[in-house]
Length: 169
Image (cartoon, rainbow, N blue to C red; front, side, top):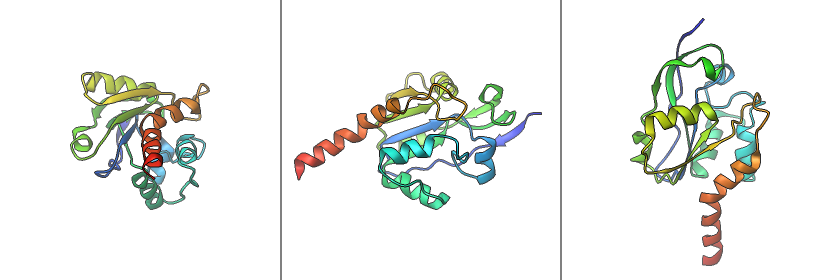
């Protein structure tokens, strides 16, 4: 049975440079009331691994980690009807107003976490001026996950900065 569900507020600050958009929070995420709450999801392991950091345990520490590393996080769907955690059952959805983040932060790249997020994003934001990339979903259900694609996308923004900072020293 489908009932209207609401997602989470975005996490960002004026220093955010990468915006990661998922589709909609899973049942487990809705239970813990924060993004990527299923410990089997590869999201936190991949992102924290990239920044050489332990996975934060609390929501407050996860937010602190994201902001410190200039990563914004939201879902492209802010409310919808959905069966369990199945993206293919998302219906009657509202799309995130990305202007809320794009007007307040220095977003250089939008990462779409999986096909559903990408497809909904492209319908709503096809002519957007910010670079974006579809990456394999970090969901444990995705057998074709490739961490290297995530690393390369993050490197396209953060490695350049690190290289510049090394030269400045």
